[in-house]
Length: 491
Image (cartoon, rainbow, N blue to C red; front, side):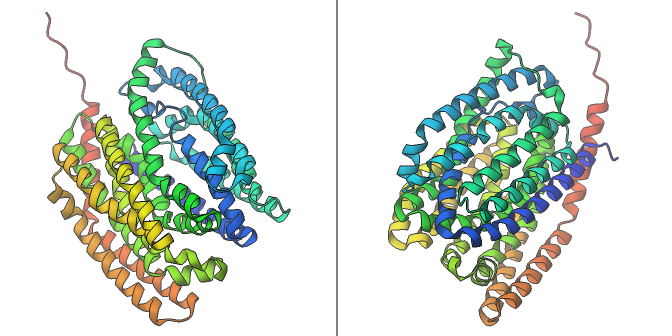
């Protein structure tokens, strides 16, 4: 049925995928234009400010907005308290960001980035204001409306950035564009979910929200550090120009995550939360989702890795060619991160904050010395190789162990991932060979794209039975929900 759990989740996933794909296309087009207009140095300055923004966004609303997505009762009961906590904490965080901007910029080797950091981080207050309506739309699978918000944010912000860049504003043009898009998106979020914009503070609910949110906020800070400590260390050790190369490669490597993983993450927590009362169905849903996600994303990751040189040369120009040395490593890291993000969301729904926090903390502790050593030994390539090694040797075993404790055996997950991994390896081998033999970059990329799409299509067709599995689970969940509650026996 169209209004079943599977139907609603599938429709939401479709909207989320379309929104993300369109948004990433705009980001790609504008990113190419900005990279050619600004060059590595100015781009590196903006990268410094972006690291600061991502840092404060990782914990600014203290993790309480996610409670709306998984709240077992009516989320409107907690919405006013969530909104109040989000806005107050975001304002406090921005004040700290404003004061600390000069010190952060200097530590990153780019003191001129102070003004860009201060302007860009105003997005923190906007994010805190709209965290509640955004979570409400996610809870209700209203991804169609969120698509409108995302597209408005992307296109208005991107066009503003490129206009400002043409006027010679340099790195500040990207900050102005980002803030303009965020403001427009905030207006739409509030218009689409006005019921979520009521302030209030219930002390009992606030305590419950803080117990839920603070471990996630702590974990989010560590997640940020894991995802961005590489940029911090590269910027501090190798300078803003090297950071510009690194960030460009990281943005490209993040394509499969942004296009495929993020739409799934926008829907999966809410879908898994509906299955909390049926743990076997929840585990099966996780495994089936992992298999389908791997089939869609792994070929894209290996294509980026194998065709890095012709991609960078053709799209961004020879001035950006050093970025091609790091892109293969970061693309492979992205492939591993996609699985980790799904596992992360699974444990969040289970309210296993300890698992999430432990895994991320171990990741960070191992990553910092590995990155320092890698960058010292082999510059950009060393930093990328260190990330991949830590993900496979340290983090993966931890997640496999915790999944086994929750009832998901490593063998069961391996069986779901075996075919996508083998298929992606074959795609990568073919693309690497053709990219080496074909000297015309445009032709090499065309062949790489065709091979990647063919591999992805073949894998998804081979695993199409998993969609049927998800459909059956969704139908069963709807039937269970529709059953009348039993009448309690008299005392």
